Image (cartoon, rainbow, N blue to C red; front, side, top):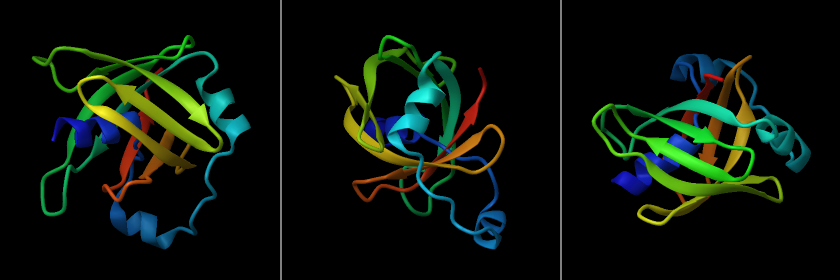
Amino acid sequence: MRRKLTVLTVVALLGGAGHAFAQKPQPNLTNEQLKALLSKGLTVRITGVDRANTAASSATAVYQRDGTARLNQGPTTTTVIGSWRVEGDKFCTKYTSLGSVCFNVQRSGDKTYKLIPLDGLLEGTWEVLK
């Protein structure tokens, strides 16, 4: 469950499902767009569900310029340290205790992004905080 939440934490889009269906699908961010987004570091709130028919949960992730990733899954949870990288047109994270995962990332709003996992997990969203 922590791995799935991490996957969602690494990536997320904000918005209602009805709103998403009403909009035309956005293209995935390219390698250059991902690098530009993350070039100065990024702090995001990740929101999503671990599996079908479960309530949404959220976490905060900090992606530092040096490739370090810090994941906080709640106010009483220990910070999980890992790394992030851009691989082709994919955003990938690796946490020793949670595993590795890669996502396609799509812009969904001014400060929101949709995370589309490549391993069949459910989608999540990023809301840029800093």
